[in-house]
Each structure stands twice: as structure tokens, then as C-alpha cells.
Amino acid sequence: MLNQTEKRPVILAIGGHDPVGGAGIQADIESIGSNGCHAATAITCLTVQDTCNVRKLIPIPATTLLDQAQAVLSDCCVSAIKIGLLGHQDSASAVTELLKANPQIPVVFDPVLAAGGGSDLANEGLLSVIRDELLPLCHLLTPNTHEALRLSRQDQHTSLELSAQALLGTGARAVLVTGSHDMSDPQQVTHRLYRPNEPAWQSRWPRLAGEFHGSGCTLASAIAAGLARGLSLVEASQAGLAYTWATLEAGFAAGRCQRIPFRYLNLSHTGAPGS
Ligand code: PLP
Image (cartoon, rainbow, N blue to C red; front, side, top):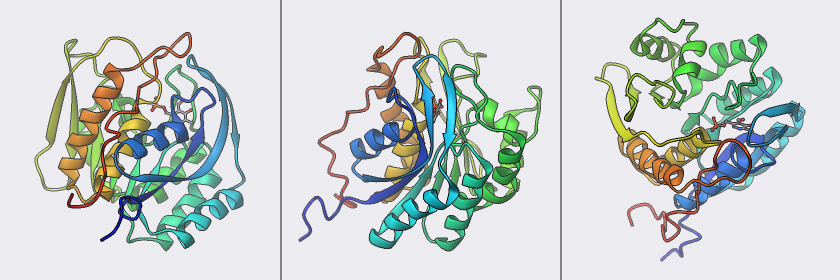
């Protein structure tokens, strides 16, 4: 019989470092670990930021990014890949190359295009590599409403449905649009999962007050962990949303601006497939 360590699926998290520990790779490590998996990591960029905004983004050379990912992929049996902030088009191209070489591994991509404080984190060069090369290789995208519209080149007046269909049209297999930026319902947040030829699946949650730093990373990582543990896409989405909502409800003020999700929940979780 395998012990718990041997049964813990490995997830490769590819993303940026946030020194304040709210978003990025630290969020991925905490969320993946709390959801029964082990996070191996490959850093795309360093950032200089606090809980208020991002001041600087320093890309890691694409060859170094690939070397990190290859070290993990050639040593571990990776059950899922989670991608967050890419920060530079060369990083996006390197990740594309990596995904093409490992087509059997499910990929969850949280397309981080802007910081919570408003700084733009994606120029047109990066956006076109994402649209044309990366999206077709992803099993699940988890954009918020702003990211879905920008990635699909739609304006605010376009329906989310149309925007999600345009993203599915790139070849991405599913899109979970997170709804916290949509203030049409002040009491509730609705998240919608779109898949080709299926009605949209919805999940509603009570709206929590305040703003959070790293909620998108927390969610995408938790869903990747659910998929790695053998859950279906809908089960992993629901479990990821429930976990993320609980981390936000337990969120805390580490600094002056956005609150940080408290991710050390579920720690009794063994994560064993079938357990
Ligand atoms: N990853 C890094 C390194 C970041 O700096 C940010 C935002 O600033 C994000 C991810 C996305 O954060 P969130 O989950 O709040 O969208």
C-alpha cells in the first residue's frame, strides 16, 4: 500500500513571485498544498509589489523558465499544470513549447492581465501569443469578466456568453468566467463554466465585502488540484470555488490595501485519489 506522500499528486505551477505573499507562486503553493497535492514551481517573473499595486515586473529569461519546468517534468510524474502570470511574450512562447511537448497533462490557465491595483501586466505582444498559441492548448481557462472580454477582443457591451464562446473558438476546452467584478447583483457572485455544446453551468456565492489579492490564483490552483485528484471538471470547479470562498471569508489584512486569502484550510485532506 502507498503511503500518503506517495499518493500526493504533483502539480507544476508556472507563474510569478509576489513578495507580499498574496498572489502568484506563493498562493499556488498554499492552495495546491491545502487541496491534497504537491506544488512544484517554475518562476516566470519576479515582481515588486505590495497589497496595493504592482510597481515592477522583472521577467526571468525564457531559457531559465524552461530549465526549471524541465527539471520538474523529467523527475516527477506531473498530474496537472497550472499557469498564472506570464509577464512577457517570450515566457508565453516557452510555456507553449512545453505544453506541446507534454500534451497528456491537463492545463489550467488563469490569464493574469492586470494587477488588482490596476497595473497592466500584459502588452499586445504577450496577448497575441496567449490568444494564438497558448489558449488552444488549455483544458480550462479561469478569466474574470474583464480578462474574458479583453482576451476575446470584445467590449463591455458584449455578453459574457459571446466572449466565452469566442475563447472556446480558440480551441480551449472550457472557460470558467469568475463573476466578482460583475456588480449587477450586489448580494451574490455568479461564476459560469462554459464548455462546447453544453449549457453553461453556474455556481452562486454570497458576495464578500472588500477586495482580495490572489483570489484568482487560489481558485485556479485549487481546481488544478481537484482535477489531479481525479474529480470531473464540474466537481473540481465546485470544490475549488467552495475552497476559495472559505479562504476569502477567512481572509486577513497583511498590509494596507487588498486582503489576503487565508489558504491553510483543508489541511487534513489526504488528497489520495479514490480515498
Ligand atoms: N500572480 C502575480 C505574481 C501577481 O502579481 C498577480 C497580481 O498582481 C496575480 C498573479 C493575480 O492575482 P489575482 O489572483 O488577485 O488575480
